[in-house]
Image 1 (cartoon, one colour):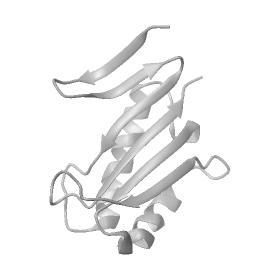
Image 2: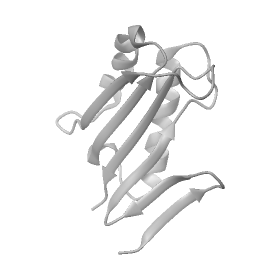
Image 3: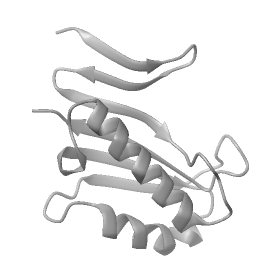
Length: 116
């Protein structure tokens, strides 16, 4: 099966598709305001758009990895996540605290989804 790469740059592709599995690069907020809920909303909107471009949607997410710059903000992020995620189609998920690549980023989310 061929590998399809979309929104490819010199460092990474935003979307990689192989065997009807969609891999998204880690997504961060375009406008990293100092609010975990607002950054999470921005990221999830980006994920919706990228999944649509790849021919799938959030109901087909298999796995999510969430990185928080401060794990004490876990519940704030979860309030937004819980309102967004498709009921009865919740993915496997891990959430960890990490030093993110850019200081204003408080949240980063990586997604793997099916496409059928």
